[in-house]
Image (cartoon, rainbow, N blue to C red; front, side, top):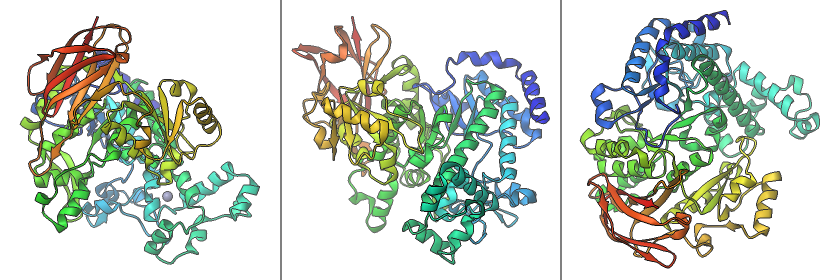
Length: 617
Ligand SMILES: [Zn+2]
């Protein structure tokens, strides 16, 4: 503790330039932020108009603090906030493990006490020591992580990013972790959470002597056999064990965030790689300021198809439902998201040079109010090649990011307008029901503006409120919803008032509302309206052409888009002017016609991404 206090004093002296941080009103992400994943040269910052390094380097020992402090300060002078990602909750790394026998004892073990290595790090070995998975329940590994956080804060990091933030919980599906600390921790967890009667119902007569390691060994004699049995649901208490592991990891994230903010200030953000915002990845979301996360863009499906055929036979990359859903769930959790595609996706983009597709991903992310990180030095992975990197052509991608920076007044502060609220049940998705994903995609394709309402459970601390439901004209409840208690009663009350309906698929929604945005011709364009809480400020409507032809790696231009916007959008105000901005062209003033319930405008062409600016009087 003395050491920690000394370091906190040291950092106050260290950061005489703290005032510079004031330039940024809000340290969490803004809609117009351009986010680089890794550190880069100043030319890259300039080319893209970067404002944040979200997954940057940081000191790994005391000797590096000054060097990183200078680097972070230099970024700050360029108006770039530098978040350090120097505490990897997955592994201490092969090199550190090779040099530190103590950390080599603080690793994840399977039920046969064999160490576990993350399968995708098979090619990271140092002096014959693999990248063993570190156990985040082991005090030694926790101390290692705490020290790294302190070093990042001492260097004056403008943010902290935690990769593989679920730590040892990530080993559950690989047969871990059954080290002494995890076994003891699980015993304490069961004792705290369940009554003696509930424990007896689970087959535990004496919690004091209960040993989960001995318990699970009875079911199998090999790791693979154990993992297979887990997948088949044949291992008792496996869900309780996973819950214990996830909550232990979340508690550690909370502690690390606390230490970092204690040193750097509450406004300096903490993020995590909350992969695809899956239920297991958002247990700790209440301790995070934003997400910096990998999201599958599902090119691996095309890769699998392409193994049996050539790419020329595959006509279309379809937007995956989960991608739309992830952006909307981030809104529901009130956390900005800086996304990247998965290692598989980037490997395929690199191999096939699919720059046109990546441009669509960028447009889509900003139109949904988030941002795809700049495709510079993105991690690629295939089992054959292992880790490799993608540095995309700057001249192709930079104009999109520069377009955002030039027009930031139409991004920052704007939030999605939504008529329909779609209930996301964390428990239902844990149970592999994916109706909510399909509903989100269906509503997007039908151009029905919607938002997601998050219904939490014992993993996600988020409860639906009356106030949240009231924001929407109608609430859609994808079934099965698996809601309980207060949340169930609230939704039932909403249904009785005919303000909520159950959905088995997205088509059930059509006919229930009159969309405030409608396309009269069948264009493959998404129209996504957004507004800002500021009287007389324009309303914006992002137009994204999603007609992507993978054989040409281009969008098929969508022409003469006949768009009607309901007067509900304007809240009693009148339209003064409609302007179209496009990252290819200058802005264009458009003719429009006032119709009985709104306004009609024809957009000559949407090449990839344009924004309608509706100025009001
Ligand atoms: Zn462990």
